[in-house]
Image 1 (cartoon, rainbow, N blue to C red):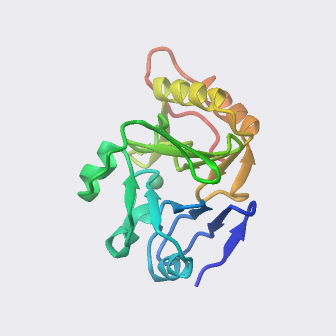
Image 2 (tube, rainbow, N blue to C red; image 1 turned 135 degrees about the horizontal axis):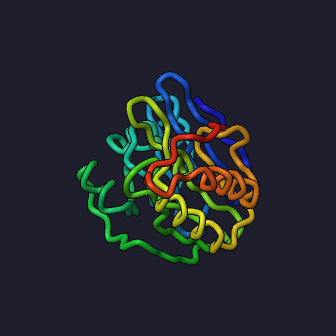
Image 3 (cartoon, rainbow, N blue to C red; image 1 turned 60 degrees about the horizontal axis):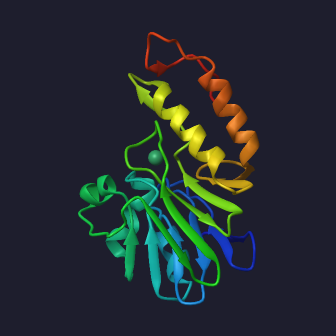
Length: 206
Ligand SMILES: [Zn+2]
């Protein structure tokens, strides 16, 4: 079973798994619900989730397998995911691009533009910590990583507009990073754009 690491009394995450590849699972202990950000992939992650009690609400960052495969085995009350993710996984969600709720902590779920995948969703807690999944990562064209310049600019603007000081980033070591530091890196990548090409290929991968 994978370890659960504490961030605050209310916020923690289940660490990532290697075989099979599984993203971190964000865990928020609300007054009424247990909120999960992604559900990971494979038995080890599933066991760690099932070890935590509470009526579950599930937020899905995007449709990639390492973030969502355990949905097949999950009991839950509600799921919050983009239409693209829902279509891909054959799920029903009444999430419409933005959702706010107070459940002992202030939770805000919102769309985050991303080159990495269609339909990325982020979750901010108490205006301080923001789970972003894989949204800050590039996509890949013929094995070469790239960002879409327009989407990257939109993503930078959304990240600047949110209050959170920290981003919680899937597959990242450290998992939690200062937002300003990440924005600086994305702006550096954006500065490499070519006005005649919507894709940015020439940047240093972190
Ligand atoms: Zn992904």
